[in-house]
Image (cartoon, rainbow, N blue to C red; front, side, top):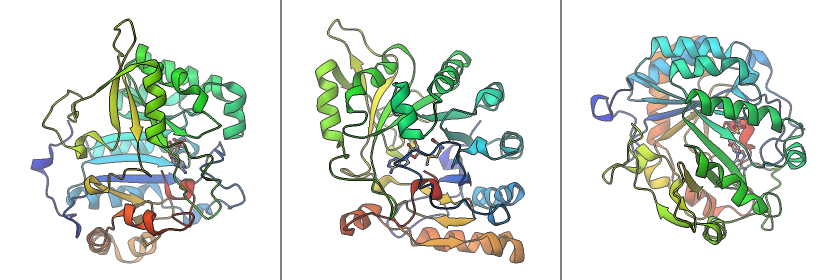
Length: 351
Ligand code: SAM
């Protein structure tokens, strides 16, 4: 069972009174898809020798655990695009049984891993921006929607906790709100629309592509009555008293049809651009090449790969504490930016 917050040391605190509990680890910058809003295929992948080795990631996790991290999310690139990722995950579960393990994936390569993910208690955020096969191929560069849907259904059958993330893009998937959100009607999944963030110097972000959460909400109201979901506790039960830290950044609603049918899952919005949730941010990131990053929008990174190799975990611990103490308020960086908010695209950071 994951440990409760109050049993853990709260050592990773920043200058804004926030405590970091959540480490998001990019295990690779490689991906078998090339989503236009996420990856720039003219940027070469990081050479393999410059990527943190699995045993090094494990050392970083061990260090983070002593500082009060209780939740790990593996992301990328595509985590399963890295050979040996499943075996690594099994090892992490065995060594850190108290950690809540999460995965963000495009769902294309999951099939051989699904039973194991279920056994390990891993919950999955599945990225799925459209249910239209041609559009999927045009967004991602690969005709793989049927594979993703097959794996999604298999996860639902197995009872793997599942959230669906769709990057909201006007003129791309704004006509699909009802189709995508309807998945929450029938299945116990949260379908969350993420505001498109202007990440990376080469981003395709534009005002005309940007579909703000307020408009998404208005569109949803044309189809359903929306009933706000009480904040949820980490055990999945609903509670008025739980914190945004436990719930994550999504605002959630139950969907109610005109006939009064209530959705099994929820419809959600992640308002990264129009309404920041920085005040409750509890995240630290580790990039594939071994840099700590305290905020998506802040280009400052703290390299630890060579330090780990040369000096060991005690020095990494010191850098982690120092990095978190300087964790900025991302919304301020976004507000001050004229164009893209960070140099790197999301795939190079680990979304
Ligand atoms: N390959 C995995 C996947 O597809 O989920 C994990 C990596 S991907 C970088 C993680 C998440 O970042 C995905 O849900 C993706 O949609 C989201 N993402 C990428 N670029 C984004 C952007 N500019 N704005 C908002 N979300 C973005």
